[in-house]
Length: 337
Image 1 (cartoon, rainbow, N blue to C red):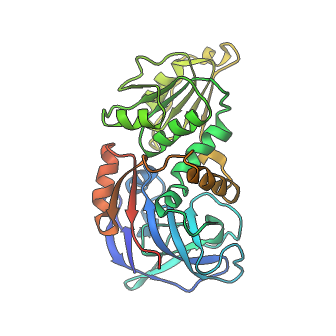
Image 2: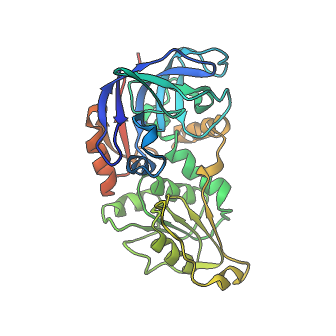
């Protein structure tokens, strides 16, 4: 089978033929239909999430597929099920790390990888969805939709009518705008240096869009997806007295965050800064709810999906992701039989 493989840090991915090994306890072989691309994978390519001793390895962490085979002990899915492939653990067995044969060596991968024609996935990284669930929606439910909805629902204590600013309006940022709108936040600011994100941000529910933070002040909740510490520091000064700043994007490993005035934490009820934990979603509970909302048109995933590539075009897709000129990019990999 074909897979996109990271063989060297800061190098293009290579399309290689790999062979899945026999399934161990709690493992599931999935035929991959579609995968989303996440900005976190750019950190992975740069080596920010591990070092060269883990290379080569397979990539991707949000996808949709069809169960092809189940390993010993698996009970939550069965052959033929359509599934969301998600990085966040859910119900079922936590398996050992999968292994593949690449040439004359055995390589490992994460417990959920999605940029390959087939993938060995830990049972607890799969959630069954109805067979008519669109692959694009199911793929987004692996990370971008569930993370954003979970952040609004579980991590920022957003009250009806509170103001929200989303800094960085890519795939996750646009979802955060949508989720804040669903929660009746007002006003919602979309902030992005790329003018192309203006229309998408407004379409997803932003009331105001700007290329900088000059028109943002006294905001109840600020959600930063950039991971840029200078941006985060400036954003902290724009919080309301009891405002919450949620760091969604991952900073560089050697970055330092300097909140220059610690007295700000004592202003009013006290400002706060925290790092997102992926929305703290429970996939087996939340994904079915989100599918139902999407089926009713309450969740808009089609506007978020701006570009589609094939697996062979993976490096062009990552170049577009790096440019900041896209919402959610989908890699189309297989067809349901």
